[in-house]
Picture (cartoon, rainbow, N blue to C red):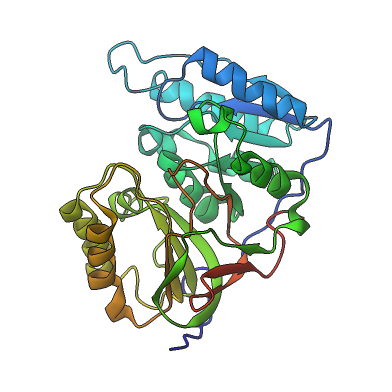
Length: 319
């Protein structure tokens, strides 16, 4: 089965790519979602500094909300840290410390016009940061990086994940074909489109918000999640299907499903909900919450070859 992506203009279109990072570039770590442990933050920042980046912390990166301890500070504070870092002309990259929960609460507090005027910069994160990836796409027209975050346990381990992230940020032309040892065909075929995605529960939960993308038409959808039961995954996929959000999607790549139900159950749900779309689907591509995740470019043209279980970047993630 072969799927040809429709004209991406009705839905997903290629986005502006920021320039690659260089040694000496200033990067600011922000906490737009959950609270951060200092020991993890400092260990992760030390690795970024080893790459030659000039790493600083946003003023409230270690804050905790006074009554809702699952948030890294009050909404206005988290939004201000992100906006101030983005609008600082000396900053080349804004890197999220971790995910958790909270990004949805602050998207309406950001001055998107001011952030657009600041120009393209590198933005990195995943998990709850899915909401911001979508917002940066719709409000800034900006390609972003779905990758490991410095205040998470996976970041401070010496794994191939860090090498892949470093290459994506500093040597993006060396990242051409993305795959993993467990990747395999769920639905055969080959399709070209524009990458988008993240946590499927957040994509579903953000439908209808002012910053949500209206459609995944023309897109290569990358989805994963953590701690999901089968019925909740079914609900998220069904919501996207019922809303028509998946109409015209070119292909789908499934990442990791850490701490979810046994994979054969997840696989059955994915096949039941996504199989009828008639587009190529790759499973276990290895991005997301797993122990050694791939770094994925969002907003660039790519080819999903489900038969070979690969995602081929048609252009570097960064200029």
